[in-house]
Length: 124
Image (cartoon, rainbow, N blue to C red; front, side, top):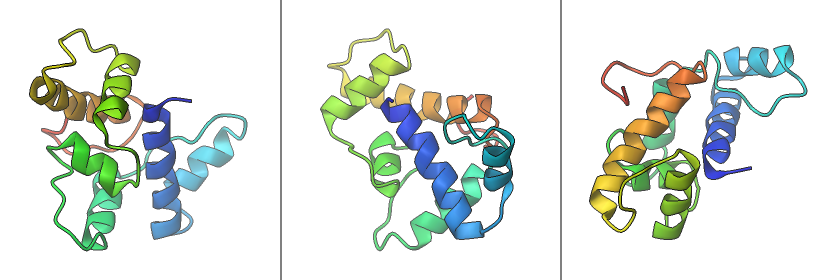
């Protein structure tokens, strides 16, 4: 299981704990053998709720580091480079600014591709 799967698991789990019996629960019930799913999860609502409780300002819409921190995941350079490999980044992973911009867009694009509800302008 890679870091992107950890992101999906966290978002799905937080959706369930924050909003109770939600679409996240329905998605898990529909596919009990599958890993956590973000199908029909309002990712924006989940992240807004987490950010309100974070105790520090986090620019999770534009910063992969802040998104990972918000979700309680490893945001180190090594973790981000591993995520870049997992999501098939073809650029220079030593150019961290460019990689990080690509990563945040790609993570939101992949969440949307997996059925998550993402606001326009995030990712794609």
